[in-house]
Image (cartoon, rainbow, N blue to C red; front, side):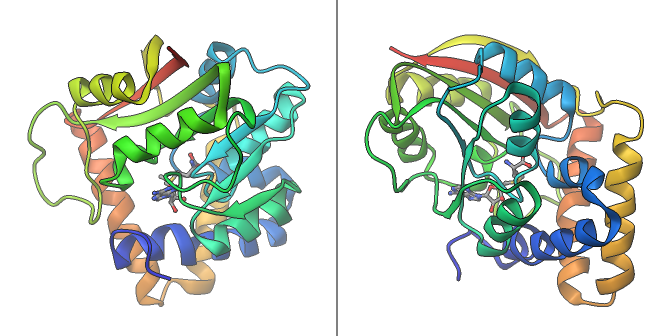
Amino acid sequence: MSELASEAMESEFGTVAGWTEEAVLKLGPEHAVPAGCRGSGSEGALRWLADALAVRPGDRVLDSGAGVGGPAGWLAAERGVRPVCAEPMAPAVHASRTLFGLPAVVALSQALPFADGSFDAAWCLGVLCTTDEKGPLLAELRRVLVDGGRLGLLVFIADEPLPPPLPEGNSFPSSAEVERLLKVAGFRITGTAEADLADNPPGWQQRADAVDAEVRHRHGDDPQWAQAQEQSQRVGRLLGSGSLRPRLISAVPI
Ligand SMILES: C[S@@+](CC[C@H](N)C(=O)[O-])C[C@H]1O[C@@H](n2cnc3c(N)ncnc32)[C@H](O)[C@@H]1O
């Protein structure tokens, strides 16, 4: 399957997702959420969004671009909902079913297999910068939300030209572009915050690291592992230098 923008992204979001599932099954379920949050990064970011979206039991919630399901699994455990995961990479969809028991479908965010107004709340974390189809993606999220629904985003923002080397296949939007795209798609921003990607409880990072170490132990000589590492290190460098900034956004349909 080649729906993502580059081979490197397919390694990072497809192959490594399958390896992550394998490693969590070996190490134990307490590793699932920390290892399964691939872009959302921190519990603090997830809590900010869950509060901003006022997620409560009974809400119909969509995680679009859900990866292996860590954020949706966290939300299920913390807020008593059963999110539906949509994600284009089949190994990641498999992982979210196996690790979190969540309903999950293979789908791009800009072509969701759901009827209009199917969800009360949706979030889309670290996905907007992985596609050039940002407008159609946001329009599709608007379509599947009810009037009065709530949208949460984690977006990696680049307000200045980024220093190379850049991660392959990404196109990071500026703040102004995100604001304009949300408006065009029919949303009004209700809140924003800079995400602290290190805002995690004790033990979280150690569990994520243990899963990474297990994956490296099993697959470290596979070229796809090196490719995925290089991708995430490039993002890490940009975040570390402050040229790329993780922003949380909540919005409602106009
Ligand atoms: C940085 S990861 C974030 C995964 C997850 N949301 C999280 O926070 O842990 C980006 C995810 O977006 C998915 N993705 C890429 N392009 C997409 C698109 N057009 N629609 C939906 N998901 C997409 C990738 O397969 C990957 O799982």
